[in-house]
Image 1: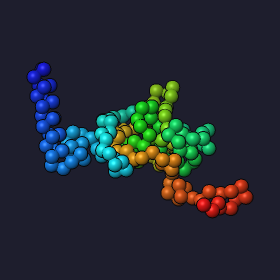
Image 2: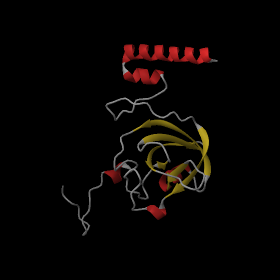
Image 3: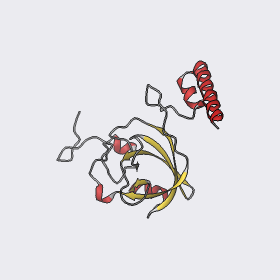
Image 4: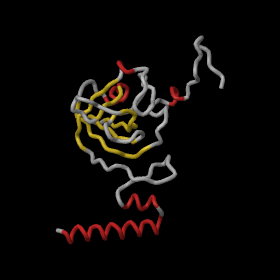
Length: 170
C-alpha cells in the first residue's frame, strides 16, 4: 500500500512538472484537478467539492437592507448562496429538478438547520424552491468578491439617489 501511494505522488509530480513546462500554471492546475479563476492575476487552486445531494434552505425577507458577511447589500434581487466555509466569491453550480443556476458565495451560513447551503430568496425562486430541499451542488470557479456580486446588472449599475429621489452626480 505504501509503494502505491509513493508511486502515485511520483506520477502526480511528473504530470505537474510536464504541464508547467508545456503551458504554464493554468495547464498545471488543470492537470492536477484545480482551475484558474479568470479575475485573479495569480492562479490558485479551488477547493475540490464533489457533486452530491445536500440540504438547502433559503433566506431573504427578514434580512433585506442588511449587508452579508461578504459585504453585499441583501435586496429582493440579490442572487447568491451562503456556505459556512467556502471563500466569498466562490462560484457554485446548484441543480434542483432539472434547473441549474451558478451562484456566488455571498454570505456565511446556514446555522442550526442542518443544511449545507442557504440560497437567497431570488435564487430559490429561480430554481423553483419553496421549502427545505435536497439539491446537487458543486464548485465551478471563483470571481473577485465585490459589493455588487450577486446583483443583477441593472441593479448593480443603478445610479445612487439622494433623499429627494434625484440622481447624485459623481
